[in-house]
Amino acid sequence: MLTYLREHHLDANLASLNYRLSPAVKHPSHEDDVIAALNYLKQEYGMKTYVLVGHSAGACLAFQSHDSVSGCKGIIGVEGIYDLTELVDEYPEYRYFVEEAFGKDKSVWQEASPTFRVHQRPLISDLTIQCVQSLEDDLLSPRQTETMFRVLSETKVNLKEIAWIRGTHDISITTPTFHNLVYNFIIKLTQNDNQI
Image 1 (cartoon, rainbow, N blue to C red):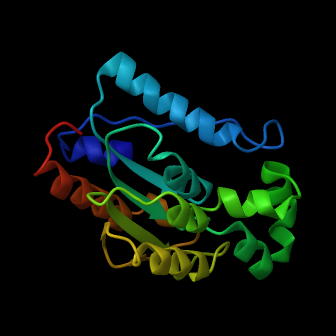
Image 2 (tube, rainbow, N blue to C red; image 1 turned 135 degrees about the vertical axis):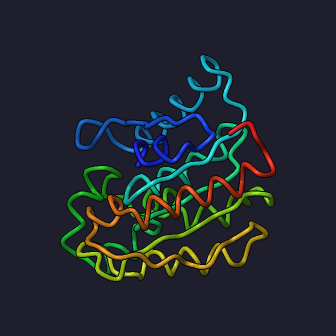
């Protein structure tokens, strides 16, 4: 995706963030890693505003961390994990990796879930959000995305309609259709703020 955005001359600085994985670490270490990376970009490169693009667990992390570092203007959540309890209800076989990352206490699952956090910590009203989902996703049905979209629709954010793309869970984010969606999302935001 970063190559596509560079080749299409997107006038924005680009960075890919990484975080430690479970079971080596547990929540909130993943979130702390993302926040540390964003703070690093602010301190070392003078980042003032930014857009987060997160896929799967990365979408969860984008919503968990966006309000911990000032300047977030937009979030693109792609085939995200937004409600951990609902995820395990729909896919009982996913319990093992949820417990590896968040432990067995379901109250921790709830508090870590973006669907819950939106109600606890109101989103910034000038935030623009795009939820993206593939109907061909082999690991997540549209249920997580549709649940998050309903929760977000009750807030004052600038919420775009769900963008439906094609491809399996790992392939959908490699397609020109998805890359173009990200490009256009950022272009529209940078028309109003040229510091992304």
